[in-house]
Length: 66
Image (tube, rainbow, N blue to C red):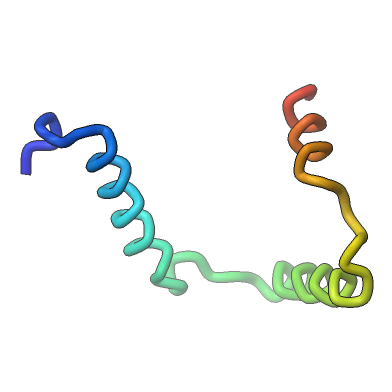
């Protein structure tokens, strides 16, 4: 396969397929117990109050302004 002959759309699809093949192997990205605890707490908090947190627009603006 010659990458130069692919269209931009085909290149993007190929990149997505490559990433999906890597990301699907959970052993490559192990999660620590500490990370699991943090995620569990966040999920519990979200389950209790789904309106908590901030909108994507506000988060994006904070990130862009730093």
